[in-house]
Image 1: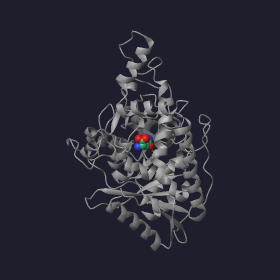
Image 2 (image 1 turned 90 degrees about the vertical axis):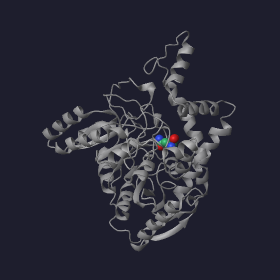
Image 3 (image 1 turned 180 degrees about the vertical axis):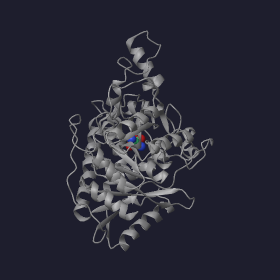
Image 4 (image 1 turned 120 degrees about the vertical axis):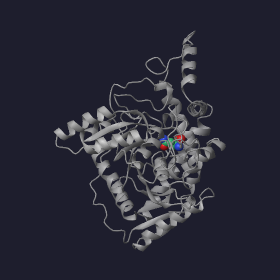
Length: 444
Ligand code: GLN
């Protein structure tokens, strides 16, 4: 009970960092009492507000500002069954679209490494910025995020915590509001790779409500790095990478080499198209996924109701931000019959090529190590001045793992010369989640 009370105290202390969209302190207290009754050890959890909980779920959008879901996401029910106590629902980029957690309807998330009063704060990364900061500040032991193109690993790197995206399907997507169905993965923030693995075991397992869910295989895991083959892909050393991130990437490889791993240069040439590929595939899914928000069954309803069409259009344009609307627009364009072949089908071929290259790389190496982001967390003004295009440079490092469905983890490996955290990313072959977490722990 003490841990839950101290988490609540911290959540209040950091309130002005915008970590939570809704606080559920009373619920957490009740869950703690139930857990103790069942003989479990209660622990504080923060859940990204794109997972359904029957309290409220907004996806940081005005569209869902007053939405009360009829159910909980599977991962939420599973956490609570193990003693997890939900302290609150965390802030994010609207509908998980973004890498800054700066433009959501309820205001920005500010990294706890900057002052909450600052109007030029350090970006916490995104889209799961609130979840990352909930672990960074010690509010939550486990924060649940989602990761479609890097949304957990990127904020983990910027805030100096572990961010783990498991193999696609290992965590159920039931109750996760979809962004890109074939790339979405519930993900884990924690302060060690060991804890990431512990929580994954708690939450994983086939779910009848998600036909793509898979069981984790029983594997041994590893206790030593000796003899491990570590691949370093040339294409991740691109022009956007900062000196600091490059140095720490090397530093991480050196640590593994000192523990007698074998470092093997590899090439993943199609990775350079992953941003373009992701932007087409994601826009296409977004266009269809967002069609459900017609404000009839639920969602923001405009007062402009002269015709059904007007009501749809004005409800959507009043309540969805420009990032979301642009992507819907682009997706509908690319899905038009005459453009399908030009965009969508090409992107699907590129995705297949990226996956195949990664699959072939794992015939030669056990893990792949790359930077997680271009450098340290930028300031809000830096992103604003580039109209948020700088975010794409960071996405480059993380998206391939989603396209290939493989597990990837960001390890807080050190600090840049400005004193801010930097992460490296480890990727392993499908269903090698345990090996991946073991190596991440040994690296740290
Ligand atoms: N930054 C990427 C996007 O905006 C990835 C987001 C995510 O993983 N949810 O689409």
